[in-house]
Amino acid sequence: MNPLQKLELEILQIHDRISLRPTLELVARIGSRLTEAKQLLPHGAWLPWVRRIGLKPRSAQIYMQVAVEYDGETGKVSVEKFLRQMKVAKLRLAAQMLADMRANAKGQRQRGDIRIVRADCRRYDWPKDVDVIATDPPWGELQLYRWLACFASSHLRPGGLLLVQSAPWMLPQHLQALRSEGLKYVWTFAVIYGTAGAVKYIASSIRPVVFMCKGRWVHRGLPFSDTYTVTGHQRKYHEWEQPVDPWAYWLGRLTLPGALVADPFAGSGSFAVACREVGLKYVGTEEDKITCKIAQDRLAEQV
Image (cartoon, rainbow, N blue to C red):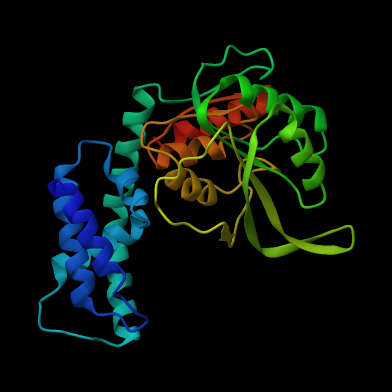
């Protein structure tokens, strides 16, 4: 076990001990270990590593700031005092957090690992041996789900994964179409929204994500939830814009760093942003000129 793996194990063991009445001591211990780990990681690898071990980057930065300020005299503290400490840490972290995110994104973009091109997905020259296909086709167009099944069958490597968003009222038809080329069904995830929209007299707050595999799925041994709750999602770039966080969460746990993700229906680029956050390569196509430009500009804004 190398030094980085030892630090990862210790961080996870300490993190499991934090309760609703947390101690600054445990938080400071995690923060100091995170600081050591950051020094061992190469440029651009910090944020993907943090997400891979199950921490949010902001939480990691807060822990590190608490480690700097912790005086060692205070043991258990009230929740109120702890939250005040967190608030102070967040304010001091903002500039550094932004700098880290931009440095990571810049490194990815310069290597050409994240790209969205204007093209018809059915005519684009896709790379072979794709590790993952993650996408959100137009839900009402079943022929695109059938094409997607064929595309996955021909371009996914053995053991490659398909994650495709669906709708509750279209799920049976989508599943039937996706199974048409021999892909194996693994699971159905769900993005859960804090507010519900009325669909066919049902207040629906879930969006299914079908998880399939070409051949046998070999999991990485990282436990994760099949649901992800999103609160306060606002569509800033497109009327059908999807939230980034659920996809960063699932892709970060289902893949290895550097895996190649293909997205035939890139839209406004949410999946591209998610891939960049967890250190994955990404190529996406978007046929609409305006939407493609929005996605490309969105990626440029975050560098």
